[in-house]
Length: 212
Length: 145
Image (cartoon, rainbow over all chains, first blue to last red; front, side, top):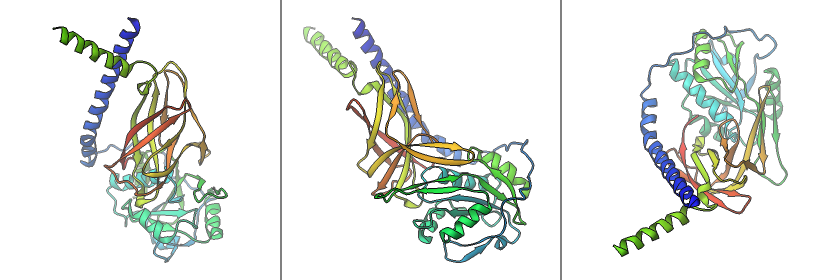
């Protein structure tokens, strides 16, 4: 009898869970609509000031997804956000680029106001075509930079970054360990802030706003 | 009247069979979703909360899906601004406990997507446990962070 009661209770709970799941599924689309409705977002007010990172950053030249040479000087007075990643990166890179896209929305910026720079650490797989397809998805006019491993290593070192490709023999799939900082670069080409992976788009927008 | 009683008993028996014992309802999966792969890339990460409602510890040992060549379980270690991703062979699910697969942590890595899914699609994922049981869930594909 006890086990019957227990079974019935479990059934009840199961039914409750199912209906909750169904309800939550049904309510999702409207949640998404609300997000798209651009509610006014209050940006945090108490954010740290921009800093000087004398030891890291500086000029470099790499090739973009169109095959053209890009030099930091080409920013020509525009600020930038710079990130090292790779397109096979399943989690960190798309999340970071999505957060960058959110910064544009939050500050009402056009891609010409702020340049997103994505430097691949996996030039072997990240061809110009792959970079172009991948970055177009985020609709922020991001530059996808690549070069020889030596050229990329030099820029990574210059920015105090780190990566290693975990290639395994016999497997075409590999992933990278990589530093996850996003560098905020001022119109003079100086690194002025390091965003960490856990920073929210609102925080990133509030800090970046100091450059405008 | 007699027929109604028999029907009622049969119904109850079916319900009891459906809910009793260590069946699939002992594992509940919530909020299963897959991040839409940018630019149609053949890999994607899947996230969910797995709840073990049974009295016994269980172990997740793998997953499969008809839309993908293979699925690995990965975890991420974030230290000093560097993300390291590592494959894990199994994930213990303590009795009465839950394990959260989320961005920046444990996730299922879908590798070799034959037809990369778009936001709004759903993907069937079959979770395999050490006791030989399996649980299939439908994961929604989203653009979320």
